[in-house]
Length: 130
Image (tube, rainbow, N blue to C red; front, top):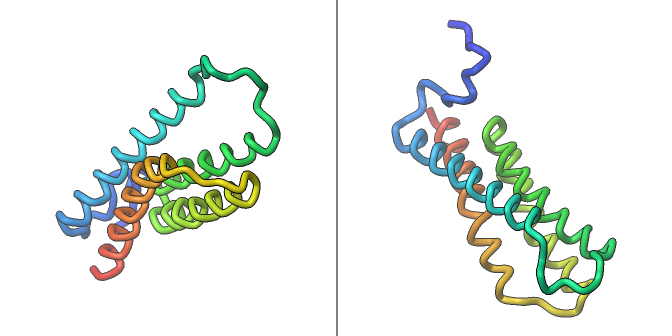
């Protein structure tokens, strides 16, 4: 039977219910993360007194890459999840190297981005077992 072009949107027909639930929770969570990131990025900071520097823009772009990894996970679950999971510690390490500090608030971003990435990996792994 030939796969239709929209096959990846619905997922693998042979997936278990558990895998389908994981996949859709991860997809909805990734959309919420994208929307939250867009709202945050497009809303002005009332406390900003200086323009964003190139270093700050680079660090922020790493979060964008992590979020885009989640969006990519809609089509390529393993690749998107790995991009997100790899970029997050790299971003934190670079932040510490650049600024010589770290804040616990960054864990909120981890809590937003890492769980759906893990769900994508579990869904991908579950499909491989079938």
